[in-house]
Length: 300
Image 1: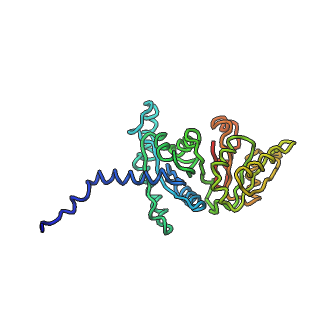
Image 2: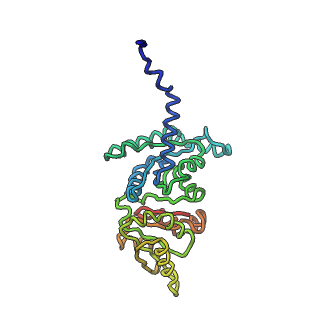
Image 3: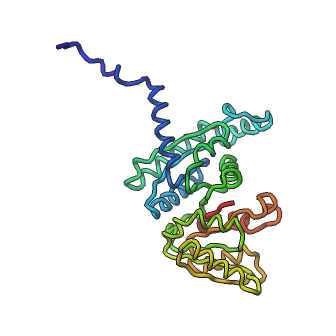
């Protein structure tokens, strides 16, 4: 029998190697989650986490959390773009500092309720487009801010237009909870809305109530007819409502109806005419992103 003392440290890999293994494990969990809370901006971290938690719980699914951030050291881009990113350090802090702010917000959120301690924060910094792809490409639903710092705005654009993900974004104002109490679908016979509703079927099926809202229907009632076909196609029970916008914009009409119907979230097809055209013309998606007081689910 060998009685020589055992060197326990020999069984432990070096810290750098352990970090790589741990990071790989966290990323593996992240990419296979049903709902991903994507946190590019510490200011919007808490509402995104609350909404993601409710969305995962509603379908008895899994939730993961990831930070993404642009870092000039890991970017392959034009010198002007790299210079622009480096200028951010003066107002927003370095990429490392921005990540640490998100990590602190995440840890504070975890302490608020039991059962959150097993959630881990994945981190991807460098080329933001590649980070968004790496973290979100398998997620069924990504909860992310549409406003905030440059990382938040760029990540939101990538999610919609490059990854074509189903995105759920925080309201303008505080999140009141009860995410799926009453979901209102802004309906017009268009592929973007159809695709959004199909991608969101699990969450619509878990809702207490679903209403498909038709604004400014055609004289033949075709919006309402196709709205009913949508519900039948998805196997959902729900109501179909038709209203006229009158002197209001369509976005205003949707929000007025949502308020009167005690809606708790909205689902739309995002940016039918493209982001920049809607920005210039004040179209429905841009208006709702700027004014909706409840969570907004969308897909381009």
